[in-house]
Structures are given as structure tokens and as C-alpha cells.
Image (cartoon, rainbow, N blue to C red; front, top):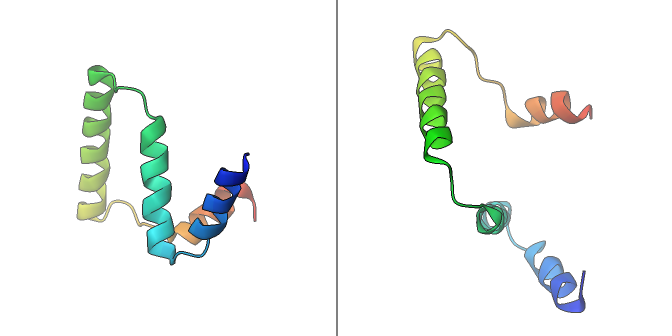
Length: 74
């Protein structure tokens, strides 16, 4: 990582949590390639199904911190 990137990172880490999250999201979006319409349509169907499960109480959401611990083991 170059000097400019390091300085930008240092400054970004000083931002409040929500601002860091928004910045991270924007940076990740900038890496995305154009979406495949079929894949996007499949995700829309999947998301609708999951939202329906939540709305109907068929599944119980868990806090992100708990989910992350299950994923990374910390």
C-alpha cells in the first residue's frame, strides 16, 4: 500500500462507525463488475423468500456480532 493509501486509511479509521461503514460500502461497490441479470433476479427471489420468513416469524434473526463470531470463530 502506498503512502497516500496509508494516510487515507489512517484518516478513515478516525471516522465514526457509520461513516466508516458507508465508506467501506462505497469502496466495495467500486470493485463490483456489472451484474448478471439472471443472478440479480435469483437474488431478488431469495431475498423475498427470506424476508417472508422473517415477517412470518419462521426464522429468528441474530445480532451481527453473534453471527460474525460463528463465522470467524472469535
